[in-house]
Length: 370
Image 1 (cartoon, rainbow, N blue to C red):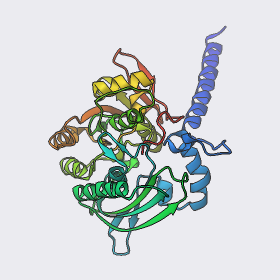
Image 2: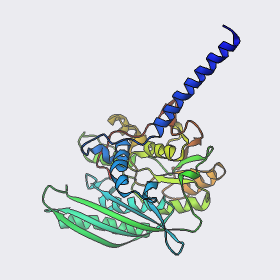
Image 3: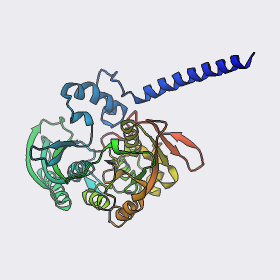
Image 4: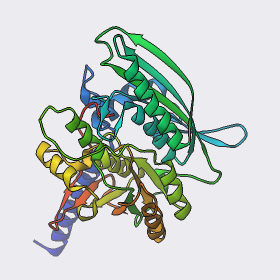
């Protein structure tokens, strides 16, 4: 075989390899398709099934530029030029009270945090209650009291609401929905399209407490552990970090689906590779132990008082110092970096020196946790 033939064969092989890689890359970038004919718990887990349901049903029906951003809150421009963030959420957690919090705390913290990581300063909330017939008024008052205290701590007001009562067995006790509005300071912008290779990934504290606290509170496996939910308002923590690192690129609170799912959303939306370091992930020993017993990866466990931020490398130290100076950010850590390739991929550098792919959550290991 002549050298020209060898060169031609090598070129053909490289071309075939390039085509295969292009197909793989295109497949990775595709949003999941809805193949189910009925709703399952997985559709509420915040992973692939949730994305498929959102795309095929809700986005298809309500499509508009603001909704297509698929953020934690919609960023809206007023005729005056001011911008606000608008968010809504529903809470169906079971049990209604768990170590470290309750459905009342979650209903305030969840919406406040969605506004905060969108760059807004939360101002006002609405609250709607679906109450099952026979629910004790004294218990309802306790959860409303939790909401009042959480709103005061977050510096927001609950200014409007609604109440509906349904028959016995129709609501599992109590459901709460909240919506919130926050104002975005002039010049502040957080977006996945600002993320660049070389940026650092920061988590504001230890992960996995909320999901594990709720799971253990159900008592189904008779396992006891000293784990409290991390539910808390992060708006003060966000403001402290943005003051120290004003060029922060992007933020998201790692609720349903945990850090792993949020990292995948970032990788796909920004068209980058997200590389996480297992050695620097802040996880409490008791949370790690509980995850091991349940066979659950802590990267997929929900948090209700933590967020992920992407920060330029030159502002990373300042951001970390600001977070650690705040009571809610003492365990903040740099947990990874952004690379240009392979696009849409999240990988974890393991403590043993290897690596593994962290895919988006598929099933629902912890249903009804928020």
